[in-house]
Image (tube, rainbow, N blue to C red; front, side, top):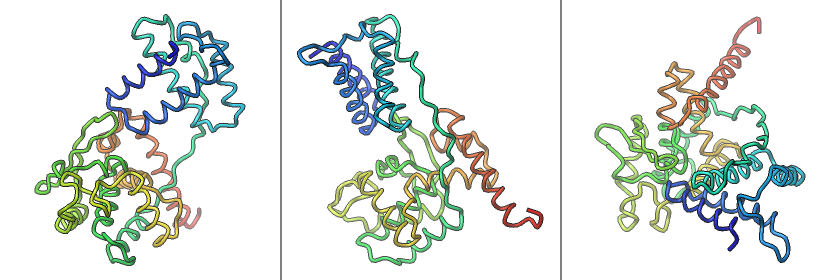
Length: 298
């Protein structure tokens, strides 16, 4: 294995020890192997991490742009390469991380589409009414109630264990990115739906997991996304609604109702307040919509 290959392996191992998500490990692994492949010439090993210069890295970045890749994809690939060189820098194998001198593509300031309170509650009420024939309707309802009522990421929801729930006090321990834990209150309707689901959950299934699939195993991220999309299309006619839409709705509706921004940051598990601040723009956008619809001089 080349020195660059060893550096990549070492960095991915470090990420795994830091409890990076499976998705991050898979994406970064693919990005870094493509990076190594770009610099590997027939019959020759790629440059060692210490041999890279700024022109080589700029050429690689220009090639990514030339492929027509999205800015999101290029930013992720650049983050993976920077992380790998940072790992080498910490170990004293290089003197400077030249990848950090590359210009990061700027993202357009696009606000996510957020369903209104009426749309969100209307959809969940229709699920509760049993409008669709489903094998585990109480599980589906509990999933929607928790995604909207607690603002969880889909990975956090399917990763919930029964032991994480305090049903008496109405709290759940959530393991977020990099396994960082936080306590999130569970509102009344979500709590009731979880209790109803746990009472009829198949006894032969995974005893730890809250949400099970039809085979009795833990519901996967992909499986949960499929459930959300199916209901969104069938009941709301909205193919664009996804689990993160409910998380966006949770934060936006809390802010519109007057919740403190730092409190929302803690509830969402954001490391930086700047990540949470985008919801102030969403809230203002919603207020402007109400104004335009209601004010006689709008």
